[in-house]
Image (cartoon, rainbow, N blue to C red):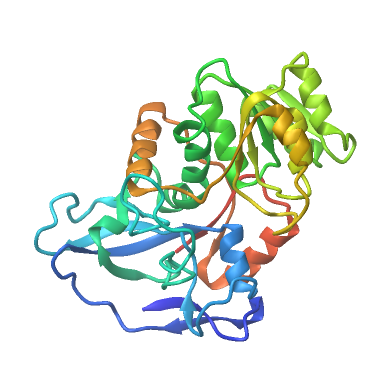
Length: 335
């Protein structure tokens, strides 16, 4: 079967389409899945270019969706023909977080979903949202569930809340759709006027071009009549955190889910203390939270925004497109 593997030393020119042995039939508690789609995350890019060192020959991509072909003994949750989608932390089934690393994350610590078939425990998947194709379903594994946990699980988002989203990548656009579904009012930033207008079409209420308005934290605070927003989905890290603290209300919630501006930097601790805000780091979520998210998607009918789709053979080109920052929402890989 075809698989896209990373050969060391890492780099986009070291992605190799290989023939790998078929995984065979499922054993007790396992399912065999014919994979048909994935989507890209900056975590995947970090592995591909060597920022997150992995093993030679690692099969990439944390997100995967496809159709169940057969089930092993004892499996009652799935049947052949079901569309399923992978879990970012296949061992984190429910409850409080149980891991702080990626040693068991597909495409990093273990082989991922850039391949045609897998045999894995049934608990490594959930049902896909109704009516989603494989690429659409794969977008919920990392980006979608991260946004859901940030706003709904940890943030306790409710109708009437105000939300600030940074940029228009996969997590932020998922968060926009979730926030509007829940009845929130949303501000969003971008350096692109065109992307801001696309965000408006999805329901964004207030648009800020951070390149033209570098003090966007104050501008967002002014938009709330000085109160500040209830929630910030912070994907930038040290380069944007000070502005996010400026924008959040006293007692508000900042979900730190990305480090696009770097892994280390100064935190304005006095400002954070004065805001009495909750700054919470998080990495995706549990299988139970993904199941809850899927039920919400089934009830709402919203669909993910997939900017562009690439075939598996063009995975390196897909990563280059991701690096360009030209995408709006998710980048899909389909086969």
